[in-house]
Length: 321
Ligand code: ATP
Image (tube, rainbow, N blue to C red):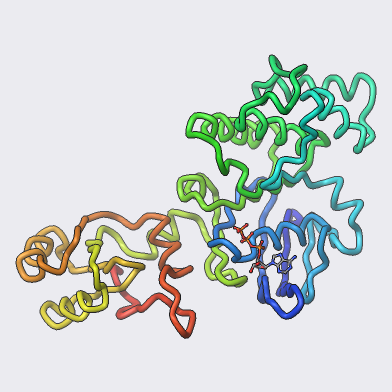
């Protein structure tokens, strides 16, 4: 069996007394596009810092292609590339100068270096701007140059920390085309931290971090299917009152997901009008649809924190099944 690209076993990390990661275990196979989701402050960047040798875990162990980032940082660094939220580029240098600098860090020189830089510039559609200062580039172009920087040494694992934040839709599409091509041509394992559900939907697998714990992990379609098939999603000013009323009047399975109540009757289409007739005054809007990844996120990460930090009120575990 192939050595996992990432193997995290029971990792906890504390900054002083603050627990940023708690008892996280996760394995990612080579070649997989893995999406790491989580609200702000849920521990995504901390996990990346552990994998990229910048931080030893307080407890547990991590391996990258079988190597421990703390014990063998050099070996791990040769196999990983990192694109953090903040670009690691020198604005006063040109695109090519930035890439030359990166190449020198990995001992790439002469023809090898020139060919690698030219290939990356071509692949990421920035060749025509190679001799422009980074300061003169748009946000989308900079992200692609930063991606080229991270790919210079042909890493087997690329860590992308919210790489499309701040990009317009066209720049995001171009960035994703580059990512897809990278998978096809180099088979790189990609771990992507993101807040964007459409990006998470493109991943082979996603893991959701909430308050430092990995609360769920699986293929997007599987996680969505676990929430049931086509159900009614009702937006209400007071979801718990609405849930009580639906329960009292119809006795069908329901669950609160953020400001919505998911209702799972056996005949959703005909139930829809009965629900409106009976409780229309309490309904802001209602749709009949299959679950989205956003619903998965809300169910597992929670949307309205309460005292016991378990914001999701599950009335019926079998909802929608
Ligand atoms: P974001 O989406 O906002 O980037 P994140 O999911 O990447 O957030 P982390 O940056 O890993 O989360 O932070 C996890 C928790 O640890 C947060 O509560 C954060 O405030 C805290 N934290 C992060 N870095 C430090 C630090 N150097 N010292 C103390 N606390 C820290």
